[in-house]
Length: 288
Ligand code: NAP
Figure 1 (cartoon, rainbow, N blue to C red):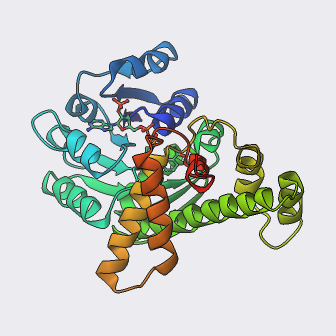
Figure 2 (cartoon, rainbow, N blue to C red; figure 1 turned 45 degrees about the horizontal axis):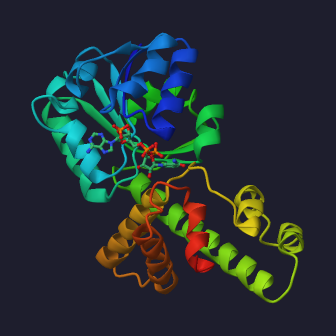
């Protein structure tokens, strides 16, 4: 099967590398061409545009930063849609809003193609280890066709139904994650200011009902208030909170906690921490 992959950021580069490793014929494109070099060295073809990727692929995967980035590789004379042929597939794995996804589905169907939204949970390491959770929704036929490739990127793959359902699921997931991380930062800050050993707080948390892999991974960094090398960029977490709040408004669901948590991440963005890992929100909590 000929696979295309557009968007070679933190996640896309690792996911595309796993497809190459699995033996698929992979053609890639990225806005910043330098990010194609490693993939090319490991056997991927590099195309001149997203359109060229689509023209030579049975299924094109895309992993873009945000809705604007999706539109920029999807639309126009050099976009994915322009290169799609009847019966070919477009799988957008970016985290976006429902309207962006519905528009991608509509444009794909107009060309006689099949569309799947497939956002993921899991960060840099799960992307490298092919242990992502993949939430898929849209054309069931494309889900079946792309499963052999999805299985080389993720360990848990769910089909959730019509386009929009995976996007909603992903936003609900990240709302929980953003809030939990913010709560961890505040707990650690309170422990530290009131004279407790933050490592002991992490030990207490880990032995109780809120024990989880994220606290185990990020806790020591937050406890020591160390640097935060980007795994999940903070700007993307704030984007997800904003999109979750937008969805909540559309469906009439109040989100008291998330609205406040979003302000915390916005403050971190305003401090220039957008490209740091989302755990850098700790800097705002610690007021540095
Ligand atoms: P990233 O490292 O920031 O990469 C973003 C990608 O989008 C890059 O290929 C970038 O191209 C491209 N891009 C941005 N703006 C563009 C534009 N206007 N036109 C064309 N291309 C553009 O992001 P990531 O961490 O891989 O995340 C990708 C998606 O997965 C996001 O939706 C994120 O929310 C989601 N996600 C991330 C994680 C994580 O832990 N990192 C986990 C789950 C889901 P350049 O290289 O040229 O900048």
